[in-house]
Amino acid sequence: MKKSVLFVSFLIINFVANVSYAQINNEKDTVISPSNIKKGIRISYIITNDQIEFLNTHFDFVETIFLDTNIRNKIQNPELVLYRSIRSSWDNKPEFDWNYINSNENMFCHSDSATQDTSTRIDIPEFDSWLMDGNDLVDSSTADATNHWVNYFAVTASAQVYNYNYDGLFIDEAGNKLSPGAVEGDMPWDYSPESWRDGRYRALSFIKSYLPDKTVIFNGLMAGNGADSSLSLTDGGMWEDFAYDIHDGSYKGKNRWLLAIQCMQRNHNNTNLVLVVKKLGLIDNIQARIFSIASYLLISNPNIVFSMTDYTNHTNVQYYPEYDISIGNPLGDFTVNDDSVYLREFENGLVLVNPDADSSITYVLPKEYHKIVPVGGGFVDSLGEYSGSLSYEPTSGQVTIPPESAVILKDSISSGIINMGNQSDIKVYPNPVKDYFIIDLNNIDKISIKLYDMNGKIVFVKSEQQKQKIVINTSNLKAGNYILSVSNKKGQIIEAKKIIKE
Image 1: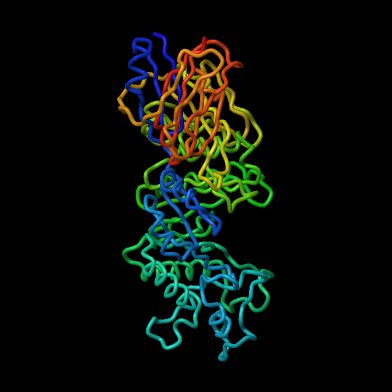
Image 2 (image 1 turned 90 degrees about the horizontal axis):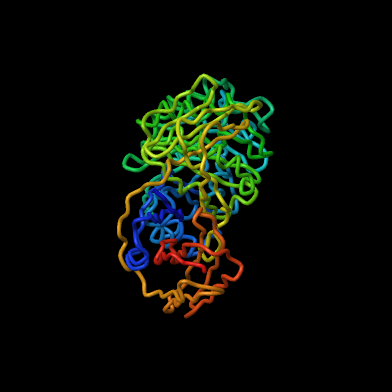
């Protein structure tokens, strides 16, 4: 039975041989394809209203440093958590009152000296001027309680979360250890990796006590720092840069990769987790993107959020077509076969990951699949426009997975059809076409037009605002069938038609 198929972001438009053209054009038959990826992002000060609309329709989890009622009101669909670093002293930004902090000498004093003054104050160079030391906690009723850093952080950050009605608090830099030579001034007199770890436990628990009905997530899951125990003290944690070094983009290797994957797998039923990829040049590195997404899919779970950022321009809003991968529910946990391929089966697909840094691995497929190949992706512009799609290549037999790479496979497409109904007054004519066709937009504001061939490849893309009619030149296209998709500014498809080129 012959099948023709178009995949468009969140929608898969399926055309089956026994469905008539009239049904396709009049009923706009489509299948809604929910993504397997729970998506997270951190936003900077530079963001437009259109980009916020994009966040509302594309992301599940947003971190922000903003203290802004308008932002709170506009970001509605994703869970919104306040970002507060427990490490960075950004003097020119309003996260905390740095005049107050710097005027209290014992804010960062940790020693056995009877007099805690500037001579025993610990200062980390440049923008880092703290020590997350739970050993320095004092009773909240103590007169000078907020002269101690963790006390001050807990009181101030929790007040901001409640005042602006955010969903929770994200504590950045909660996992960093000190080492000799890392600070300008004195190390804590009793400092050791063990005392730091135990003090960190107390600090996390103390901060959470100020936010009993809010979500508290910390950035500090990593090897050797008591990650599993820390997760029991808050509502979750982030494993940042689990695959790549943000400074030079290098792969951290299988052992570091596996520590993160195993931590996520152990804890995903009990707490909220965030898995993050930050890599220089990620937008142009399709292999790294597929490897990252596939690694997430190995342990994907409703409690795990995934975030992926090209760190070359990390303050810009970014989105990738891989976020829209849909292969159904997992059929179990990931396994490792004899050739060291990490794999996980899904209702409608298969994920294969090779985390080795040096050797390729071959795998014999049990049946024919469609290999998922992302096209484009990256920045979401100020108008909320984004260019990216998924294409699908028939794949069978033996596949070779290069080092630090992955393959994501989708079953042959035979999805059922549901009726979206008429959703717009858009008219397309003539059809069949020869050298051009016209789209009558009926003055719909801000739309995106894409034309696909029957393999899911984009052959034409265009964005327009407030135009009545658009002429699409088809003189360079081969004769055959194509799919036209028209999306609104929220990325929702409002028109889908088969175009016949004579």
